[in-house]
Length: 312
Figure 1 (cartoon, rainbow, N blue to C red):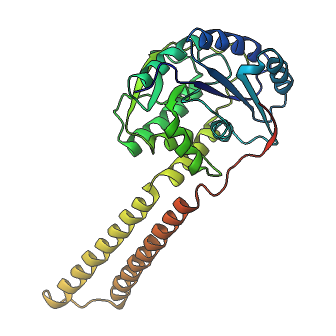
Figure 2 (spheres, one colour):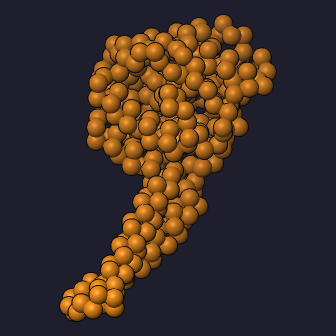
Figure 3 (cartoon, rainbow, N blue to C red):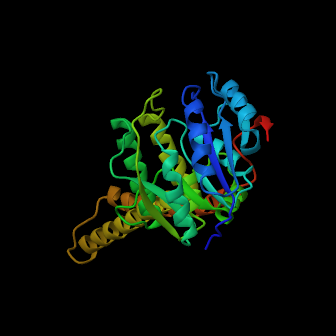
C-alpha cells in the first residue's frame, strides 16, 4: 500500500508541443497541488523541431520548484524519452502521460488512487478513444500482441497514460536498452496491474505521429526484444520439416519393402535432403536460443538517448 504523503512524479515526453504545453503544465500543477503531496513534473524534449524547448524554459521559470526539463541531443522516440524521464524521477509514484492534452490532468488522481490501493501499475482505459482511425487500428494490433505475450485479459487496455510504483520504474531503468518498449518493460516486472477508466479528450493540436510503418516497427521491436515468439516459430518450422521427412521416408520405405515397387533414385535424394534440412533448421533453432539469451543479457548495457541539457 502507498502512503498518503508519497511524492508524485509525472513524466511527459515532448515533441511538437509548443501550443499544448502552456495549457497542460498549469492545469497539471493545479491538479497535483490539490492532492496535498509533494510532486514534480519531468518534461523531456525529444529534440522537437518547433519552439517546445523555449516554451519549456519559460515554464521552468514559472514553476521552478516543481518542474524539471530535459533536452535530448537528437530525436530518440517516445519510449526513449520516457526512459530518460524515469532515470530522473525522485517520486514514490510515477505517472506517464502524453503532451497533446488528450490525457486530462484531472484524471491523474484516479490512477494514483489505484496505486494507493496496492497495485504496482495502473493503466488508463478509455470508454471511447479519440485517436485517429490509423492510430486506433495500429495500436489495437500492438495491444493484441502484448495481451498474448503477457497473458492479459482479452479486454485489458494498454495506453501510455498510467501510474507506476517507483520500484517498478527503477527496475525498468536498470533494464535500459537501445530499443525500449515501455509497456512491455513494465509488465515484465509486475503482475499487480489494473485498468482505470478515464476520460479521453479529442486532439486539439497537431496530428498523431503514429503511422502504419511506425506501428509495425514498434511491434517488431516488442516481439524481438521482449518475447520468444520468433524462437517458437523456428521451432515449429523445424518440427514440421522433421515430421515431413519422417513421413516421406516411411512412405518410400513402405512402397519399396512392402509393395515391391521400385523407388526412383530422386525419391531417396528427396528423403535425404528433407532430413538434413530438418537438421539444419534444428541447428538454427539452437543458435536462435543462444542469440535470444545473449540479447536479454546485453539489454540494459546501453540506452538509446543522449541528454543535451537538464534544468532541475
